[in-house]
Length: 208
Length: 177
Image 1: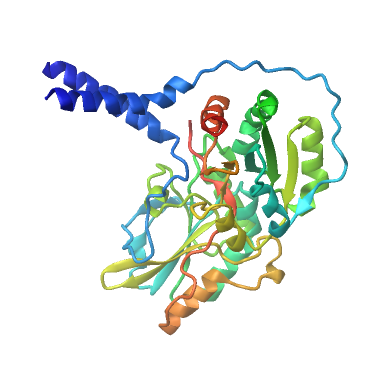
Image 2: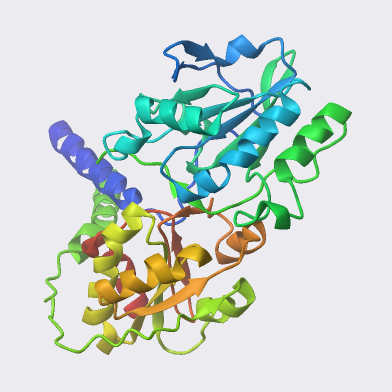
């Protein structure tokens, strides 16, 4: 009797699990606005390890999930560099993280990342989430995907999630710079008007 | 005790229903029709595209957001084509909404449509103000592609994921009842 209940329960669990694998409108786990970010430690293109805790003397960090292979991410490279140039000195440097599985996207491997960073003159670390265990904590789903963190006594707080600005095609046609507005508000100590925005991006690649 | 058992079995059955519906064989018909890819693309901003996401007729629409540069999108496109072919007699229409970059319409998108002989209707969305229109497609869409909307006049489901043919069919079928 007991055994059969166990069996039925197992069937039930299997059924439930499979019923939910195709759940419409997947809910993204990951940080929400106001959450404290856990420390992470990832390899940079120079081979050194970089941690979020290395940034404890800064006011915050502009964490940017990006990669070499996504056209949207590439379209934003110059603007990511510009963000670092503008805000690193003000206490909000950029930290870029490449989240893709490199067996799916070989052109996103560490040596390709290094090459691209040199070509473009990245002024910030370009880290690889080799175990793919950092991007899910953030709830990043695509590249580019930006998380502006503000350092408080309790730790780094997620203050903005989303797009860099409102025109991927043409930087000169941008009318709202979401990330700049967010960081400017943090610097000024005023509330961020838009804390979350949406933009098209390439899904983060995982091996099957 | 007995009641509890019945209850559990009931739930187990319900959760398995999804699998039971699956696996219906569909024949891939090799249509020998001539490819008629028009040289002109149907390009819309979101205001123009919105009507395609809100038809109130008797059809069920499967709207796939894709781009030629998106590898998982390209991988799943044949399943959408297959679905369009297999269910066209059942009032189902597949709409392929391309998010290709305008500067690549001629160099990438048009050749792709031609080369793959796409038979489903291809629409092109060119609207840079994504934060405005993405939530109008679905408020939970983070913006990654592939993404798919299945709807008819009664209901609407949104998926931010890749599909194979069987999964697509399973999601489509409840709309046809």
